[in-house]
Length: 63
Image (cartoon, rainbow, N blue to C red; front, top):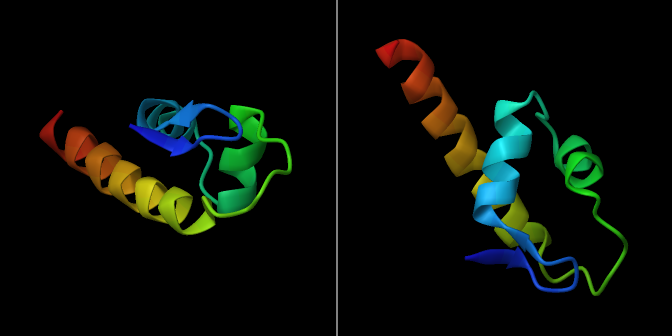
């Protein structure tokens, strides 16, 4: 599912950025190549980052 339509960034893209070490909203935006747009995606992005952090944490404890 797309998190940002303006930049065509999906939840998978966000997950890959978080897995690669991006931790903050700004870091994820930079890692995903975000360009300024309408801004309506900010809440969805924050939620996606939170889900990715939980997923990454679960993956690391399972290993």
